[in-house]
Amino acid sequence: MSSSNAAIPTTLKWSKHVYTSADDDERLAIHPGSSTNRYKSTIQQITGVPVDRQKLLCKHGWKGMLKSDTSFGTDLSLPPKQSSLTITLIGSADKLSEPPTDRPKFIEDVTPEEVEAERT
View 1: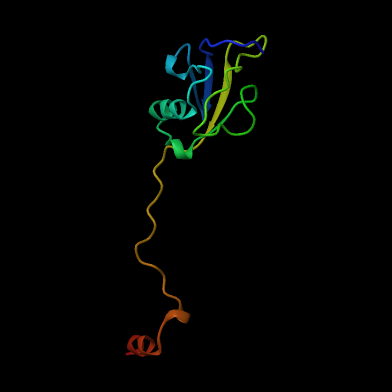
View 2 (view 1 turned 45 degrees about the vertical axis):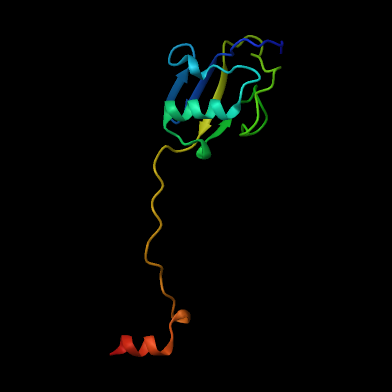
């Protein structure tokens, strides 16, 4: 990998959607040394997946999931014979369901007076 501070073109794959920095949005290009939080915010704007629910994987870019509150390495570059880095996004844009407001009551938690009140 060669060292360069030029923007690195990317292809973002999420579910059945594919976004490329060349065709869809130049904001998807990665600038070595830039903030990973800013990149994740850009992905949220494009896909609707909240930052805290994003898991970004890139075989030739970084190991494991992309960590927040860091910067892309300045040595990040395209692998030979590739035109862009392929990034896989795992996460859902759907809103999480609300927890139930009424908590279940277990027989162990019921006082004898409440048991009698239920019987009558």
